[in-house]
Structure formats: structure tokens, C-alpha cells
Length: 238
Image 1 (cartoon, rainbow, N blue to C red):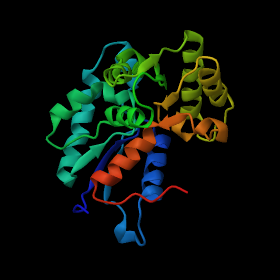
Image 2: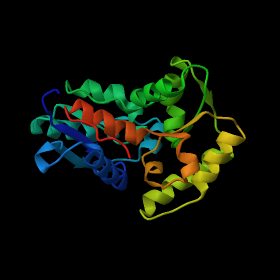
Image 3: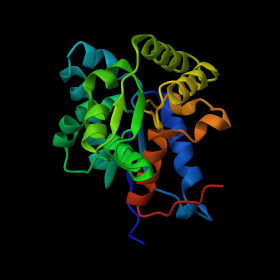
């Protein structure tokens, strides 16, 4: 096992999703005592500008200037690598990585690699994400490069996805059957093999058991990568 390393977390996008990420890291780490868990430095920068608005309006610099200040704090804290529990922010991945020599875990590449390993080539994949993530094409490019087929959501379904995301942002205890209904439609009507939950707000919604097997949660992939790259072991899933 590699030497343990400190994980930096660029969080707050949104705060609830960041707290879920932290809890899942703890839950998925094989540890018998406190000292066997990850050392983490979490920046919960909730006041960062809305990522979807930044992408849709093609305004990058105000967001990146604030991120640069956060990166400096993480550098001073001595983190070995950085996790960003927000899919949409990975539109700015190259810009963020250019700010620092500290490796930033690529949530989207890791997720698509995980999906490809699970289902192989020429399978149909749908992505549930913010308008900003969809417009940025970050998932689309990775999916097609991996030799899989992308199912593009109809506008009416995409609007439902965005409604769910912003409901979660405004109400942490929000429960919905709407996400299950969308997954069911994509699997049984549009014949998708895998649904990627590509927004951390969607990661916080409990799914019906029958739908879980069709989904890959990008937040879970980031959790596992964070644990492994920090030199810790994954706890077996029950």
C-alpha cells in the first residue's frame, strides 16, 4: 500500500453535495480507527459563481480568479492532490490544472473509464447533468472517445433534470420520484444500457432498487479515486 497522502477538496458546489462526498469517503474507506482514515482539507466555497451560468454566458474569469485563491490555500496546506465534487466545474478542468502543479483528479474521465470497463464498446449511455455540463460536451467527448454511444436527452427531459437539481440545491431534504421516472424511461423506452448521474445533487437522491443497477454515480467514482490515490483501501460494498 502506498504512503498516505492528504486530499484537498475544492467544495461548496453545492455545500450539501460536498457534505455527502465527505460522508461517502469516510463510509468507503477501510479503517478500524480514526488514524486509518484520510487526512483531508475541505474548502467549502459556497459563494462561488453558478457554474452553469458561467458556461452558458461564456464568462470564465470571475470563477477562475476565485478558484485560483482557493488553490493557493490548498497548496499552502500541503495537499498531495485535489478532488472537486462538482461535475460542471470540470468544464474548467484544464484551466484549473494549469494553475497548480498539484494533480487534480479528473472526475469525468474516471467515471467514463469506469462505465466502459463495466459495459464495453457500442453500448448506449445517457448523462443526467446540468445544462452547463451538457453544453460543455465534457461527458459527450469522453463517451464517444471510449467507443460508446451517447443518448442525447430530449429538451423536455433535460428541463425535468434541471428542475430536480435546483430543487435539491434549495431543499436538502427534497425527495422525488421524478428521477426514478426519468431513469425508467431512458432504460425501458430509449434502451440505454447505463445512466450516468453526472451532477452531485442527483447523487443525494435515494433511488428505487430496480433503478440502481442501471446507474453509475460520478460522485461515487470520485470518492473511490480519492481514497485510492490517498493511499488508503476501499471497504467492500455490502
